[in-house]
Amino acid sequence: MSEQSTTAQETHPNDAPPVLVEFEDGIAWVTLNRPHKRNAINPGIVYSMLKTMEDLETDDRCKVLVLTGAGDAFSAGMDLREYFRGTDNNPKERVKLFRANGQWQWRMLRHYSKPTIAMVNGWCFGGAFTPLVSCDLAIAAEEAQFGLSEINWGIIPAGVVSRAVAQLVREREAMYYVMTGEKFDGKRAAQIGLVNEAVPLAQLRDRVRELAKVLMAKNPTVLRTAKIAHRIASEMTWEQAADYLMAKVDQSTFQDPENGRNTAMGQFLDEKTFKPGLETYRR
Ligand code: COA
Image 1 (tube, helix red, strand yellow):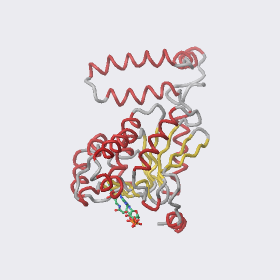
Image 2 (cartoon, helix red, strand yellow):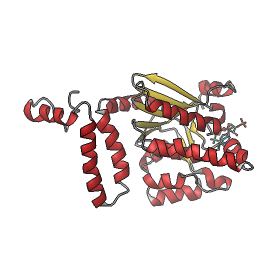
Image 3 (cartoon, helix red, strand yellow):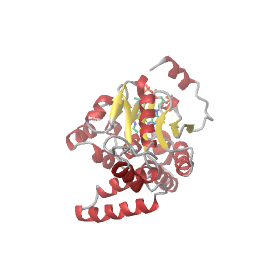
Image 4 (cartoon, protein in one colour):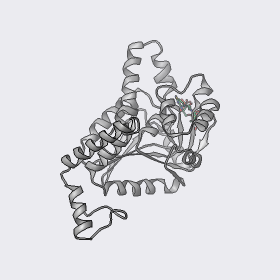
């Protein structure tokens, strides 16, 4: 742990907002902000993330959403004290809380209308795998530590963690980590397909910024349709996907205020001023 972040974690005020949002040139940096609790996801984070995501979806300052954690953790997963034990004797609150958590962690994130990147800066355990997997892309610090630690404290990777892991990680590796609870680092997370790549922690923010800029250069209508269509088509039969994807092409072309398809065709076929294999058309 670095000296600077130790200090930040120790001096964290009790009334600090559970989620921070900073805007920077189209990027909304969304930071889980309980560093003194390793950003364990408590009711405060759940309801605040739900609101934050609803707000950002229609906020023009957010073109790409980056999800990360304050201090040395991305997130140590669900808060054992407040999320689990705190609702053991309150089934009504539990239903409400668990639903709200599923809402932001995957129902909204998986089909979010803006591109999302998980920036895994440190500890990432259990319930934190769900938003990690649900983000479109993920870049980790090589030094980050991941773990399906549920087995170590007497539950199974539930919520929807096992389903999320199965989406990205091959069965052998998934079963190994589900059953052993062994932790692994960012490089290993990239090897097994849980994140796109791992970079040294010192370069993490710059790499994420660079990736966000690539996404922001694309036609946003087409980017939104492409990511959602990919997720939905991946769970269809080939026949269904063929029909659905053609309908989505028509939908995105019809909705696109930039008329991107025809503009790009003109630039490539008539003007010969750009090559779609190498770059994005002039917008
Ligand atoms: N739920 C509730 N509290 C948690 C937590 C969690 N998931 N993860 C960390 N915390 C709390 C600790 O209880 C501690 O609180 P305290 O200061 O009141 O004692 C504080 O956060 C700091 O944690 P600590 O364990 O001292 O930090 P560390 O840097 O030594 O270790 C971890 C970091 C992530 C390895 C360790 O906190 C841990 O194992 N957390 C649980 C991870 C887990 O199994 N998550 C799955 C949940 S689904």
